[in-house]
Amino acid sequence: MTRTALTAVVLASLAAWAGAQGSTSAADKLRLHRANRALLTDLVGSGVRLAAADQPVTRAEACQQTARAVGLEVRRAAEANDEDRVAELGGHFEVLVRDGLVPALTDADGVVPADSPEGVRLRAVRAGAAADLDATAAALPAADAALRAKLAELRERLK
Amino acid sequence: MTCQSVQARILALPDPRQLPDAFRAHVAACPDCTAYWKQAARLEALVAALPVPPAPAGKKTTFLEDLAAEALVFPKVTTTPSRGWNLPRPSVKALAGLAAALLVGVGVWSATKTVKPVAVVKPPAPRDALLEKVVQRNVALAKARTPNDRLDVLAGLAEELASESRGLALVAGADDMRLVAEWFRTASDGVVEQAGRVPPNALTPDQRRALLARLTDRLAEAGRAAEQAATDSPPHAQPALRSIADTARDGQTKLRALAAQQGA
Amino acid sequence: MSLEPDPPADAEEEYWLRDALAGDRTASARLVERYWDRLYRWLCHLTRDRHAAEDLTQETFLKALAALPTFRPGSNFRAWLFRIGHNNFVNLKRATRRTRHPLPDDLTAAGTGLAELAVEDREALAVVAEAVAELPPDFRSALLLRVEEGLSFREVAKVLGTTEETARWRVFKARQKLMKVLAPELLPPGAAAGE
Image (cartoon, rainbow over all chains, first blue to last red; front, side, top):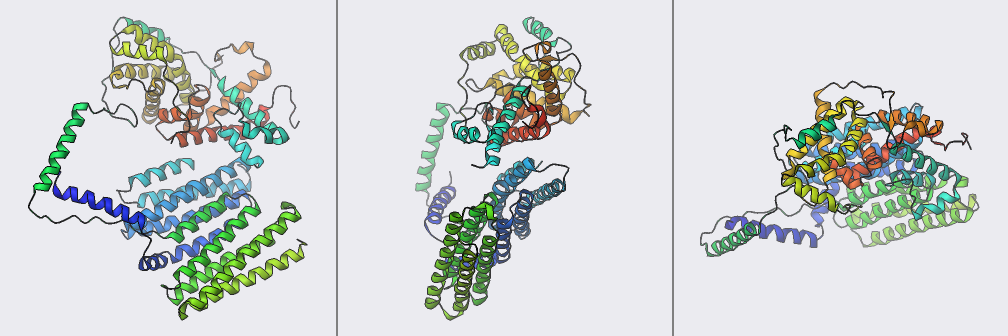
């Protein structure tokens, strides 16, 4: 191993430890708050909509809108070549789809007749969610293979 | 356990015919779930017994005869490692060689006199803790099945936003603080509105009373903390913190009125 | 993290594998005898074509025996074999335009003759068979591996080249779809609808 590579290994280990120990600086806190202003406004609103959604299809629709908002931000971050932001928001997008949207669709599938008006709405939700997943996965940088693979698996669950 | 969740979990079992103890009590007491379980069990049995047409050409017999006579023609096999299988295990010799190489490498490194530029490794990027919490609240709201649960989660969202306002007060500008106050109002108004829309038969009077009392207390606490923070914060942050305190007080008033109206 | 442990290795099968690797054709024949019919049955459900299923079964065993030196002793042979079968099925799907064939009249029930079953059971089986055939292939393959072959979700995942969570989800979705479509058919024989 070269001296450079070994030094890099040592520095990386120290950095990881330091990151785990310390909290966000005030400047970073403010920067992140400003960067996420619009997204947080959307998510607070979607939280209230979700709280009001007591029917399966309405809940699925609200989940899809929430995930869509985050997916859009992921794509914007990818266009801006902001890898850190893509990684952070991509993780949130995955969680919202995996733990919120997919279970909501599954629940709705179990109770909504396919040929009813609600069934039509549900199919639209599913199609919209699939389009969002495809667009978000396509926007990810090549290095983000792990997240792309997770989104592909989630995409399959929407079929 | 709701019927919907029990029925979904029955379908997710390795074998729906074998009901775990955790479900038995509910299924035994619920005619709908009993019927559902019986149907799921019957489906499982029927799938296990699906008919299959006989193989048309007797290739198995031919295959075995050819195998015995060494007459099979095998395809070329290109070995590609698949996940979890057939990965080559390093031999002890290889591991020893690797260890020796590392030791040599360290020795060479320490003996090196040339100073080369050090590769700067980026530390992990800071993440927005509030964003993470708000995402988790959205997931929890998506999963919540009862008005009780939804309201508790929404009230928690309001509390987190109020807490964020106190954390930002020392570093953020007036506009930033104003926005957080608006978020708190959205969440708090959402709590009050949803509390008023809980169906009459969803909760017993005691449950309704407890829910409204709990929500009132939570808003009260958020308002108190905001009021206190306002007295300790820079002038530009005070209007937003007082706005949060006013919103919380307003919410409490409406919830108390709701409680009185519903006899809770 | 797997929620189900791997099943204990079959000692007899391990001897057959070891001997087959050493060139013992009798041991290879035993492996073929053990798994041919089961593999054929599963591939028949996937392809809905008994000719294609038989061809795929033969192709799978040819590839498996040729690739036996790459099989890691102690790991799950059945899952490995079915994985090869699944890959062959996927390749076939890609290469050809599949024509759906209706199930032929000369059905034989797995393990028993249809004639021995009560009329209601025969009718229910026919309806279920048709509904299973309508499932998306991914759901169908996972469901049958779990229910007909008795593979754990972990083993199903290995065969299909996916995660245990996805395998479990596919089986769940398959059952959910079938329950929705077949509910009236699934009442026990003799029970009237609505009781």
